[in-house]
Image (cartoon, rainbow, N blue to C red; front, side, top):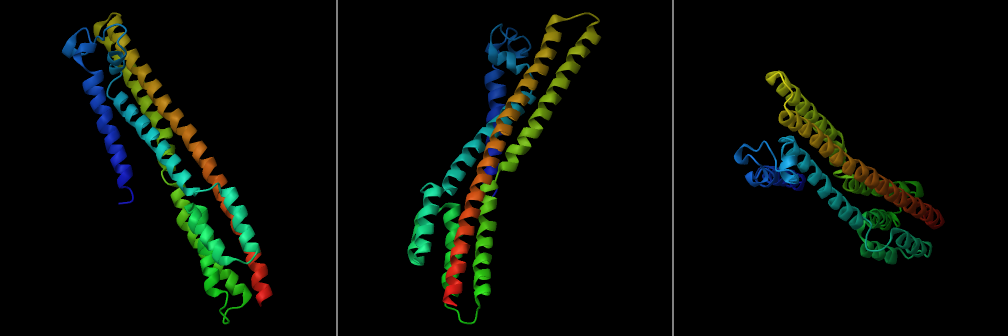
Length: 262
């Protein structure tokens, strides 16, 4: 069920793209020869792009999928940041921790939510459980806190990086699909010349159009995906670094408190 959203997005993108390609772009009203759909009306963009072949629909689907996951990642990362700016939250959290007010710090984490709030809360909750345990020495108490933090990080990091592989994959395959369409278009253009034995402007233009429209579609999908992938990868890396800094500061403070209590 975790991948249900991805499956729905990909399926809908393919259905919408092929429906748009066949019923809107391929509308006989866009062509001089009607149902044959070989000669688009001059200046008719939809009919002209239709001559690029079915791979145009695939490239439109890839672009839609990429755009959808750009919005999905934007929403998810914004949610992972929590209710307040992470820097402001970490500053207030550290102040409470320096005062030894663990309950207030936990309440602040609960209010903040998001990945950083969840990770710090997991560490503090474990600290409260082991702080007064006389059977554990200081090192073991800190190890238990660190283990709880690591477990929380292992749960949060995949959520931050989720679906980035889809953007990366689209960036790679869209150029290949575009290249395939380009190759097919050029093959058709030269086959038309070979069959007729003479230069047919119509057949040649159809083949070249198919080649160029697929090239343009592949590059468009690739550019969107590459820019989005690099942007979100940088955002995730910076956010994880912020969490690591907050955890390090928390562990330093807890280390001092545990050793003083011992």
